[in-house]
Image (cartoon, rainbow, N blue to C red; front, side):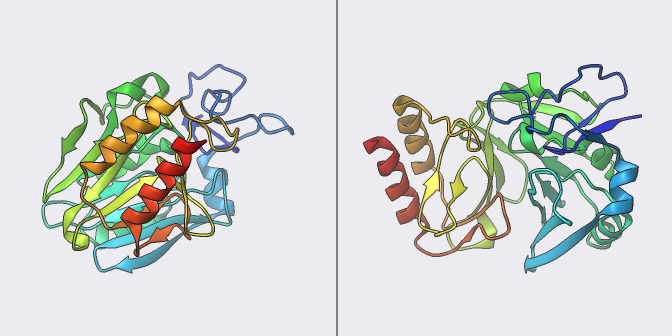
Length: 262
């Protein structure tokens, strides 16, 4: 039986024999002081449910309630040429299956970085779609399903002017999704490639957020250049409060300069 790490929500295959979660024991995350604990998808279905929030007519937030694992959200992006799930949550219940099918199913799942792998293969099998992960992070894929496609380079074009952009930093393969049509300059779904503060006035860009490991100055400079070449005026991040729609470029620029001054 496949097992799910209770700390991060990553699902591992039946032949996974390590005592500790490979994602949590990596330096960007951590094993809780209470120790490694596992669950199964069936147990999760019995104790939790999915919750869907409309952000606009083309974008929906999906979370697990009550909170599970690191508490991330996924996004359903509706698009004429095919719908996209951005990032993943480790619960696939009938509620979300029905909702996505009512909206036309999925053509692709795109993942920002390893903390969102969750049970991505179950989602891909349910909706008969591909999963796109940057090749830089392929070593972290424990459950190598047939639907997984590793892309390379700085940018990967999906359709309808939607692209996956490799930013790096948090992980070498950390990526964002740019959706041009959803705002004047474009919407960025960033996972925690950039982490918006509760004040809504600062983005952290770190190697590890929970362990407070900073990035090298040269890496921040590279990311600064990379972001300057992308078009966006709206950012939706890791948690439900991380919706930034005003002064976005100014806040990103200010945040990067603060990182460089440290």
